[in-house]
Image 1 (cartoon, one colour):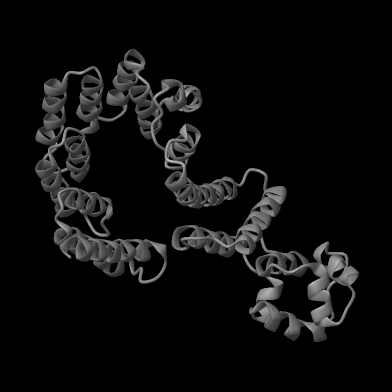
Image 2: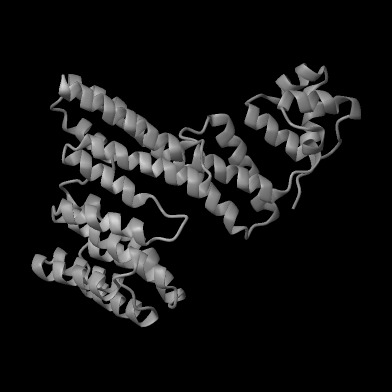
Length: 348
């Protein structure tokens, strides 16, 4: 699918954050003419094309045809690499994807990217909300309503268990796994919600289905999770260890056990597991274990090691993914600066 020039002008105008009238005034024409372009009733005169290309910062060729796949890739890169998406770019991306769905109503990628756009905005909105609410709490520290709003913004846990439940997700994945009984990961998503909300009998039944589809270290990890939630800590640890013992060369076994060791406060074991998971991975490696390690080192007050681990993360992103710019590398850089500043303040 390619975009007609009228649709492309509309997309570029929305991205730039200007109205039809503002574009028309710049070009010295009526806004009705711009409206006709965008509705593909007429096309701009050829002498206007250089002005349009300069105004929008694109080539004349790009005004005519931009493959849908290129636009999709562009939006995906924006989501991954931009810490904050401007309203203009957000509106441009939503407009393009919604128009795509009008032409291709079964385009799953368009639906997915729309969801990710709103997830991205919601995450940033929650971060902003938390900043404002913390300021409010400086002046009214005993306002229960303020604390509730902060917990909401930070995705925390409420004392009222009803607000911590995941009934909607459980119902969705219950239906999903029936419709897609052989999709291994779908059962795992279902398991996560069941265990968290205390549906242990259903979790055990689901785990049986998981084992039939594929035998992995996660069989023992999830079985241990159920035992842990039931208060059987020693049994849980034995099962988590069994997952590693039976799959000693599977990096996922170590990162999974590392997560559980954090849960029981065994930080030394968790650090070794995360390091082992990095050692066993093939390139390009995921950097999540390094982020977890940096977090543990900060908890332990070892800021030097936390910084070194984050520097390793940046090196892997650059050397194994060729990522030098954008939020993926900016985030660990910000964390390094924060840790260095914090360490200096503590040392004074």
